[in-house]
Length: 191
Image (cartoon, rainbow, N blue to C red; front, top):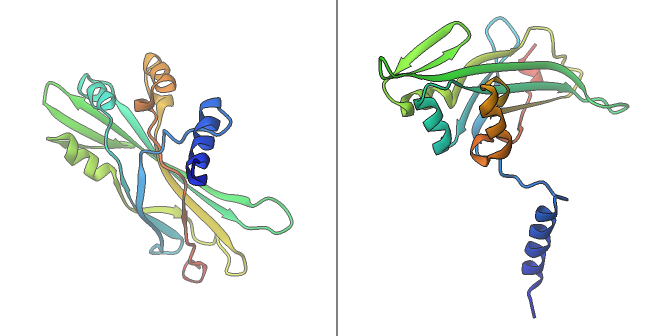
């Protein structure tokens, strides 16, 4: 006789194979810690730490001169009992990771700022840690309401060259993302 737990595992595996339940292959980025804190002058800032191993295909692409982009996304919702929750804030932070064979340095860029690194590990260490990112402006939250906030990191395949976008659709190594991580919203501190 087969144990009930083994039957459940078999049933879930069958459902994944049939496409009824989506496989969770793209969740290779973990959110180690994330918190909303009051910002100077009002509003709130996010501090977050992510963890992931860079797949070999992505490392090779970077070393061949292909820039890859990582997006860190933040969302804030006001809870409503009578309707769907209302999205108040959507914010995205995009990092560009590239390699220059001429200088043998990795570059991590955010907006117009770029920083060189001697190794990929050094660049990834900075990429995995977000500090003092202001996501909520003063006056957006009210102490009378309740809020949900969430954050995630993902490889932004839409900014890859077109041939690599096809690879991203068909290969698991190119789908790198975390689940949404819920954040506590300290409304009393964010006035």
